[in-house]
Structures are given as C-alpha cells and as structure tokens.
Image 1 (cartoon, protein in one colour):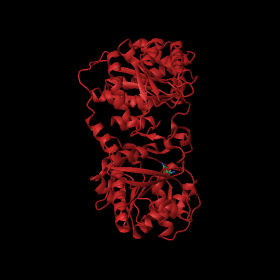
Image 2 (tube, helix red, strand yellow):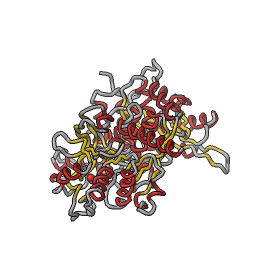
Image 3 (tube, protein in one colour):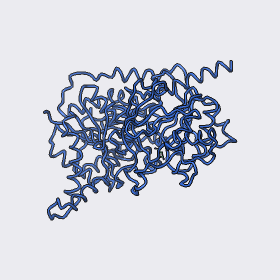
Image 4 (cartoon, protein in one colour):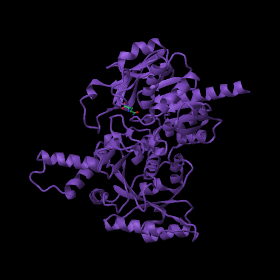
Length: 543
Ligand code: GLN
C-alpha cells in the first residue's frame, strides 16, 4: 500500500481567516484529481467536544453519522467533498487529555511520570495517524485550530514537528495561512505580520512549505517575491487567497493560484491529470444565475450569529442552485415575534423554517410563527425543536389543550406532548448523552416525505433529548396531523405533516447536516420548490 501523505494546515496573525475553507478547497482539488482525501480538525480547547458549547461561542455544533458532536468545519468538509466524516475527524484537547488520563488510571504508562511531551504529543500523533493508517485515504489534511503562538496550540505544533521529522520529506508538508493586511492610510499591503507568524512557527521548529495569504487586494509580484524571500518559501508556494463573494469560489481560486500543484509537487505525487470540477462548476453556474427568487424566514433565537445555523444556510444554497432560484434567507429573532407584530414580520414570506434549539427562550414566538404558517398555507419546515413546537402549536390551537408544552420548557405541563424518553430520565451528564447520529426512519406512503425521498426507508442525523409523546398520537392524528416517519425499532415519531396544508413538514432529525454541493438534501430542495410554487401563486393572485 502506498504511503499516506499528510498536509498540516496552520494559521497565523489572527483567527477567522477561514482555515477550514482553505483546507476544504485544497481537499476538493486533490479529490478532483483522483486522490482519496479526508480532512481532520484538531481543536485546542478543553471541552471534550463542542456539544456543550453555546452556539454563540463557536457557531453550530455539527453532527456526524456516528453521532460525534463536532466543530462546524466538518460540515464544510462534507459539503465540499461529499465524503462522510466521523469522530476521528475532530479531536479536542479535552478528548486528548481524557484519553491520556484514562490510560494513566488503567496503569498503561507503567509507572512513568505522565507529561505533555511525550504523552500528550504521542496521543495527538496517534489521532492524526488513525485516519492515515485506515488505508482509506491517499492524503489526510489536518487543520490545527487556533493561531500559532497560542499557549493552547503548543502541544499540537510540537506533535506536527515530530510527525514531519518521522514521516520525512515528501510525505508531510505544512501549509500556513496568514493575513496580508491593507493599510489604507499608507495605501499599502503589509507583509510584516506574515513574516512574524512564519518566524513564530520556525521557533517551534517548523518551516512552512506553502503560504496561503488572505488579502483584500491582489498581491503584486513584488510582494509575492518579498514574502517568498523573507518567509523562506519558493516563489510558487506563495498563494494569494483574495476575498471571494462565496466560499464555493475558493476551490477555483486556489486552482488558479496553483495551491494543489505546489502541494502535490512537495509531496512527490504525480500531477498527471487536471482536476475534474465539472459537477462543482455546474453547481456554481446555477448558484450564480438564478431564474427567480424566494424569501424564506429562518426563525430562531441565535440569529445574531450567522454561524449558529451554518448548515441550514448552506443547505439553502445547495437547494436554491438545484431549483435555479435565489433563496433570500431572512433571519427573524423568535424572541421578538408576538401576535401584534406577526403580520408585519411573517406575512410577506414565501416559506418559514423554524430552527433547532434548546431551552425556553423565544419558543412562544416560534409557536406564533408556526400558527401563522399553518393557518395561511405558507410552506413550513420545522427542524428538531421546530418540529416539536409544531406539535405543541397543534395541540394548543387545534386540540384546544392550551397548556400543552414540552417537558423541556415546563416539567409540570398537564399535556406533555413532547417529553423526555424513559432512557433519558436517569441521565445527569450533559455531554454526549443526547440521541445522536444516524437513525433509521420508515416513511409511510402517500406523504410529502415519501414524494421527497422517493424511498420507504431513510437514515438521518439526530441531536435531541425530547421526543414526540405517543400518548397524544391518537388525538393529534384524529385532528388532522399525520405521522409520516417512524423509527422502525422504537416507533418514535420522526416526521409530522398536516392533512389540510399544501406543504407542512416537521422533522425530529437534522436534514441540513447531510446536504452537500454534489448531493443537495431532497427535503431542502422540495421545501424551496414549495416556496417557489407558493410565491408564484401569490403573485398570480395579486395580479
Ligand atoms: N431541545 C430539544 C431537545 O433536546 C431540541 C433539540 C434540537 O433542536 N436540536 O429535544
């Protein structure tokens, strides 16, 4: 078997430069040249996983098929590559320490003093090589979170240094992402921050092989030469990464700059064929040339931070391109919706998506929005908490159970239409204990879900503790709610629809996690299509 090659992506100068997008774009180009490629993210924080983090901290928590709660960059990896990731693709300092400490408790270190070097660094190296040793990949790209020079990153940088030495030239390289700021007062691009961050990397014994320079202006030949000379890289290894209007342009921009070529040359891998980006570019063309547009409301409580609903926003981009329509997503804060302003905030929309979430804040606004969508035949998609709120709304306003609620919001509700599963009741730990990852779902014939998926069984990813309470199923169904997706083993309700509504779907799972450029999620595609139909009908009625 050929040696797996490793590409480490580090970041300098500042955070938020988009290492994840650069890593994903490079991976896309390598994949498009026929190399089996995967990406891994190492996060230098002490949380064991981001599952316990508030979305305001690091944005959305992404969930993989195997139930790992991960950094949102894994979403980019899957969306770009259309290859599934798993727990092995995201490792945090917390997880590294947890596993080293567990080994220490089992006596595996045979009486040795357990230290950052070599025990923590060895654990990091092992986690990096798990993917490479699986035999599934030609190239593994490992993105190191944070910025070089951070105290938190030190063990990772040391682990990378050791791996570079052990794997040898041509088997592992470092791509360093930096910022070349433009000083408007001087009218100049500045290379010094990049020089400093390369120097910081050098102090840890690592020489960058490739520099990817984020910039708002084109880098002149002179600047490129200067960066190459002072940062000790080849001229062709200075890659410009200029601001793009969409992240989906970045693979093509990196191709023009030759990022994949320089990486392959350094890894001594053949450059025989050009990358085949036909499908990718077809998507881009559709994305950039929409024939019409729709306005969809995204109702949630974390709307101030775009990253909180990253996968949903990206799924709309994929579904929009598929329908050749521009999806204008209007983020609406559920805390500020009430009966008095509902018409002003919602009536103009062509579709309403009620977002996932946790806790009580903003739920009444979500329920008001759902009522409006139901009564006015506006296409509706409820995801996870959004589906649960749709059940509550129906119980309250159609069944007349005014105090219906989820036991998450009110433990003592007389009508717990959404409640905690028996297995969840004894759980006290918050981390990693929800119903997570891929679960099967059987779809009933004669339903929107069946039309959408065109299949009788699907599997989708979950992340929740509360469930549709079967005790209320009969009553809800008799009143017009349809339960069109059931878990084949437990009969838990996974999908709800409404008899007398053109397009009203609530799903207990998260379809957004599985939408990719190559494979837009059918539920989002169908939802956008329903919004388009609704919008056209509305315009025709008004005319
Ligand atoms: N808070 C709800 C639950 O735990 C919904 C979670 C979600 O929307 N992901 O069941």
